[in-house]
Amino acid sequence: MKGKVVIVTGATSGIGKATAAHFGTHGSKVVVVARNTENVSSTVDEFTSRSIDCIGVVADVSIKEDCKRIVDESIKAFKTVDVLVNNAGISMRALFVDADISVIEKLMQVNFWGTVYTTKYALPYILKNGGSIIGVSSVGGLIGLPARTGYSASKYAMQGFLNALRAENKKSGLHVMVACPGFTSSNIRNTALTADGTPQGKSPREEGKMMSAERVAEYIYNGVIKRKRTVTMTLDGLLIRAIGRVFPKLFERAVYNTMAKEPDSPFEKLD
Image 1 (cartoon, one colour):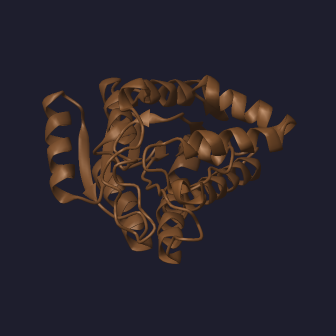
Image 2 (image 1 turned 180 degrees about the vertical axis):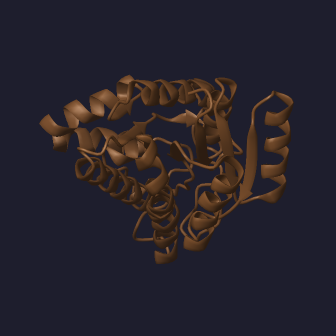
Image 3 (image 1 turned 180 degrees about the horizontal axis):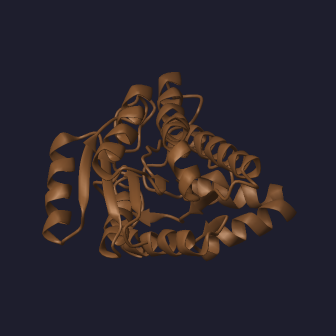
């Protein structure tokens, strides 16, 4: 990947930052994309101090014009784009019956439309280079997660879009990959939206027992090198794909019970 131009959205924390750093330390030119100006600036400074060739772009992927600007600024700085990692995303934790519909809309706008917009503008350059488009999904894109209806819907939609894009480009040389981490130690649960759209502020899970963002970044990098279609990174994810198809009712019950045991679970009021 030395010399390749890699755009990473949501690149100032968690999986996005680890992925951008991993590509950068292997010689790629990195475009660091996130909404917060201060976070983008500090991440670029950190990467530059590590001899990573990078630029920062402050942008909100839920805004179509911002996504065009991400690509425009990448081309201005590096002349082309080889890899797009669609990582920016938000989660939720609320029963659908309680959730404001704007919460679902926001998740779809960021997680799904953010992928569509950025892919649309980057695609001509990536096609020319026979490059890669990556979507960072989740186990929530493999099975519907209770109390995460909007999140699962957005990840299912993203995966369907990318799978169709791959099929469309069977003869073009385009590489499309869906990456499915398990529960990862990152801030996505801290910023997950509650029923009224406010961040929950703390993770209901023990972060220390989860996969590290750096390990996820390794999977993504190696998946690009090997041009894999799908990367499922945990045993749980593999079991979800296999058992969920064979014993769907049993598996849904098991998933419900697991999510209901989380601290301060939205399901407590149903007990």
